[in-house]
Amino acid sequence: MIASGNDYALEAQFELRRGNLAITANIRVGAGEIVALLGPNGAGKTTLLECVAGALAISNGHITISGATVDDPGAGIWQPPENRQIGMVFQDNLLFPHMNVIDNVAFSLRCNGHSKKSARRKAAEVLLFLGVAELERKPIEELSGGQTKQVAIARSIIQEPSLLLLDEPLSGLDALASSKLRAFAVNNLKALQIGCLLVTHDSDFVVEIADRVYVLESGIVTEFGQPDDLRPKPNTPYVADFAGTNSYNGMVRNGQLVINPSFQLQVANLSTVGPVNVSINPRSISLHRNASQGSPRNNLPVVIDSVESLGDITRIVTYEPTPLVIDITTISANELNVRQGEHLWATIKATEIDVEPLAL
Amino acid sequence: MKSPPSVQRLPLVVRLAASTGALFLIIPIVGLVGKASWSSLLLDLKNELVLDALQISITSSIAAALLAVLFGTPLGIAMARITNKWSVVLRSIVLLPMILPPVVGGSALLFALGRNGIFGKPLFQTTGLILPYSWAGVVIANLFVALPFVVLSVESGHRLLDRRYELASASLGAGANRRLTSITLPLLRPSILAGGLLAWGRALGEFGATITFAGNMPGTTQTLPLAVYGALETDRQLALAISLLMVSLSLFIVITMRQHWWSHR
Image 1 (cartoon, rainbow over the protein chains, first blue to last red):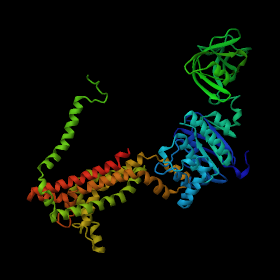
Image 2 (image 1 turned 60 degrees about the horizontal axis):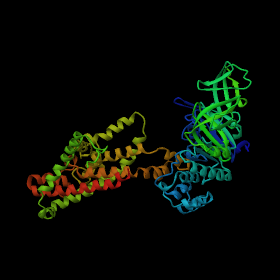
Image 3 (image 1 turned 90 degrees about the vertical axis):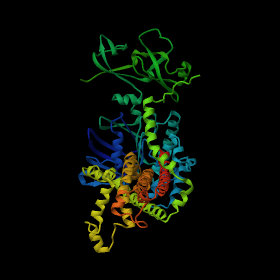
């Protein structure tokens, strides 16, 4: 998937120091490749996008978009945002409130000297291509959250930029709008073959759409690899949380694994002592209405925090005695009829708990 | 049955103070309206002196308001963006005419733009133009006191504006000029309108700077406020009639402002 040489949609290797924020990034997006950028809140993901867009100047290094270097303080190169071959979809969309949908979408063509008529015709074609032709005549304030995002995407891709920056495109949407927009983005962005750098918190979206994943933590960007690599072996608590893996820090004492006083586990073949990292596959936890008998089993009383259907699998998050992410089949979830706020029992087989000594 | 006290109900002290404040503003207008002899009102106003003053007031105040928008909008935008040490100096200079007694402003204009003034003298020598005691002088006096209203309105409007709209338009290929004309100015429209209307209202009521810099010559530089002042000495009935005319003009501006500005907030 990764193109070679000058065919990168984005090639960025830079440092940014701004106040007490420092970002070190080494990111590549191939032509037509969709790359997700993950990271906890406040890690500087939006700031990184703003560097690429040209809202901020980097401290050193370089940013090259589709073969053209747009920022390189060492070489004295700086191109303002309007000279960069990018489209940007902002977290809060920033559709121009004084224009209707079609004029928002047509805006970049108008900037490039198209007549009002031809710009509007092209904008109508793009809306039609994206499957949202019915929005054309609507005033901005009448759009729903999902429609606003669709128009923002239409506006940013109309000139077919070589690089599209998307900042949290699913944020602020309810579950239905979010899943609709996910389908919209997956279908259209894949078809358009525009290189995308995508910031999101939605792991399913990443798995569905992204070719590669980077993680930004503590200001440092590290390549993570394929989205599928995220789930089985999370190497930081953020990634674990993101991918829905249970990851805890615990202590092994007297053959017992203690995560906190009310969360202790029986583990098979416990060979280590002292501080450990514990990970539990969400699929190896089961849920029951009553405490089950027999050993060696871990029975934990839990309170259901959320229930989310992911298709065949239903993801259940609990918050007592400690947060657990549990993936059970949707069939058994329906049988159990799990509801938020209910008190149930979670069972974890002693053989399914992975314990790694923490390197000191 | 007694209805439960509303959460919004204010303490008695607050209500009393609020009523006093409102009364204080209403009483003078009531006095004005109550004293008017409505039967002769139109006849009083159909007087050459009044019609001249009305024409000068309207034309000069509108000209001043338009000039204030023309120069005040860029100044307001610039002030919202300047972050260096000069912004404090600039802001003080812009605010000064709002605090300064208008008579002092008029004198300052006279010393600067009068026939022997620092700028007025070379202006007269090169072009033969004399600004004081002319219709243009009325406009300049009006502009001096009205300009800050546009500047402040546009500046505060610009500060409330989401600057990222400009980044959004830049990422779509809009250069500085197009960002200004297609994004910033349209988004600032309510602030510019409000500032222009405030400037118009201020220019319409201008007295001190006008009489000092442009004089009080009926038919040339005498505006409605100057005519009221003159009439108070000679013909109280006429003064009353002109005052009522000014109340209606000001009311018109206030209502226009409400429609254009506050209804959008």
